[in-house]
Length: 459
Image 1 (cartoon, rainbow, N blue to C red):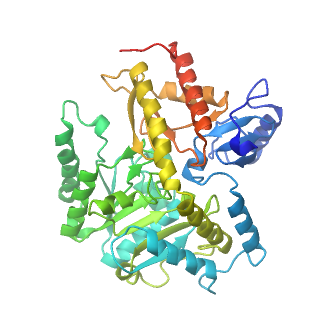
Image 2 (tube, rainbow, N blue to C red):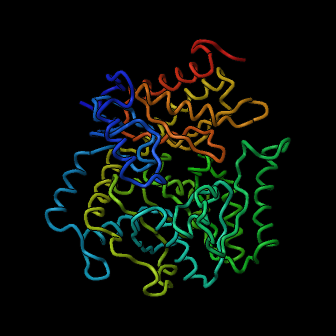
Image 3 (cartoon, rainbow, N blue to C red):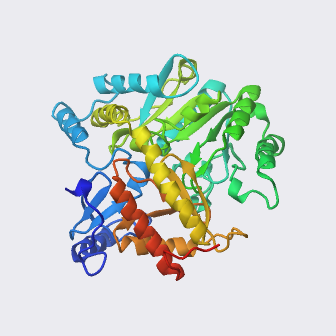
């Protein structure tokens, strides 16, 4: 069974002939801007495993970039989607009410860790739509125009979310971008200013928020501060809880809403259903939460959740869309949450995180090209450097690692401002044997590309 299988390459080269043919057809028929450098053409997927058109088996550590926390092709979700599709595919929420839309909203209102006793949910289709609508909701409530985001942030590819996104390679030739978006420094503690103690760094990064108020726009013009609890594209950097507490206080003092972008961190990935539960435990829950990706096991769906008083201030007609809250997607979402809660996938994420982080820490001591290991639960970043003392990024090695691992059946993806971080987003049904196999493939690739031996310890 593919679900329990280990990585296996049976063709002489990857991609094999059938996969290569489809990849070539893609190159001839689709937009070059939607780039794919991976030598994999999928035939089927189960759990954390993918089979390509040539019969090769790959362990997927990317999971659709965080979409497949529950794994590929979960049989119960397949059945739920079939059952709903036999009734109706679509019922536009502006025209008629369907059970799945209401039931999923009720479920999210009960589990999403935002401030307020009474909550309401709005559905969209993608992470970028969720983030953009979260901003619109914040503006509608506060009647203020501006928002604050951070260095390293990724929020999407719409005009507004491209502006919110830090890395401007994602906005090349797309200007003019949206107005009213201002940026402070995210607490990337591994790359804090040279010589600065970590305990001083939090104050340094908090001060950059006040700098925005002083140099860019007054605090009373800001509707929201938007934060990823753990930056994704920025390099898998967790927001330190002491910093989050300070941001929460700034928001409270200035009448600003705190928005958690949980597009990638939601649905058990970080060891809780939502990473913002860590915030809530520390007394600094967000006002609005935007989420997507693993919400519906691969069906297109996203959601924004906020307390009733915020949602009720949104002007009629300013949010919505044809496919928002699609019936089949909502059915998949309800079953996904049910399975995650029943099967303890948040606890599984913590166990996976301990296994992977433990191995990564050992590797960090052995290979001087590894600079930092960080994350929450099963969302883990492995940062590669040319030198552990200088922290000089090593994107070339990461690029080669991605390709070398693919040749041996492990799918990896890079991240980070400098492209020097390997992200771990493996589907949570991955077995311990599969984890070990993947870690072995990664370490062997590091050894091959650096000329070191797996049993050689570097001091």
